[in-house]
Amino acid sequence: MTNKKAFIFDLDGVIVDTAKYHFLAWQKIANQLNINFTLEDNELLKGVSRVRSLDIILELGQVTASQEDKNKWLTQKNEEYLTYLVDMDQSELLPDVLTILQFLKKNNQPIALGSASKNARPILEKTGILSYFDAIVDGNDVTNAKPDPEVFLIAAQQLGISPENAIVFEDSVAGVQAANVAKMISIGIGDAKTLHEAKYIFEDFTHIETRFLENLIRK
Image (cartoon, rainbow, N blue to C red):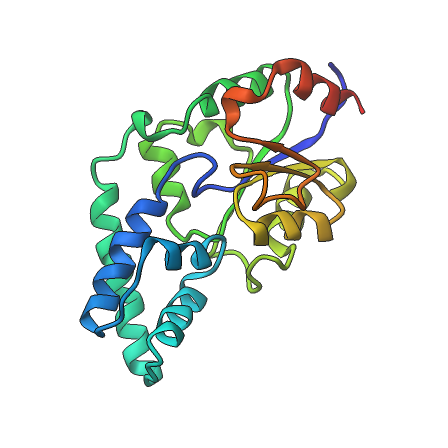
């Protein structure tokens, strides 16, 4: 296959399931503030920056805070989250993620990460897949959070591929919307009802056949 596309992956919920660790870290902050923060509430934070996530939690508890306090809690949350990542390894990869990466690499397709996470590199390193990525764009590189398409546009630019030739794997509504705004092909990974705005939807990577990827590359 000589055609080249930009394959851009979100991180949390697509490559690894670190949402559970984010939840535990945020819940600890919420408990300190006497805010009842549930798994259902945590869905509101998918694809959202750390700063905005804190604001959402404070809004849920109707808590107002100074910027100084917010900065303290943001630092505390990240430190708590990082403790959960210490023992991460390749077993944390979601099913068939590695198979898809290997197929794309074998077929010389450019691969990028497009994530709001500021801890993307250490996660990719610990799970042993850093070498598969030709570009990494994370929360340290962007100003605007999804559904703004900035993260995906930068990723495509770094790969030298035009947006219309880019394919995005996302598990969040905001991420799918960002891909659509960028005029990229959006592939939702997860619940079909939630991700109905995506062009294609798969429950997980085990449902994606190589034939499907080959057709995307040839288009």
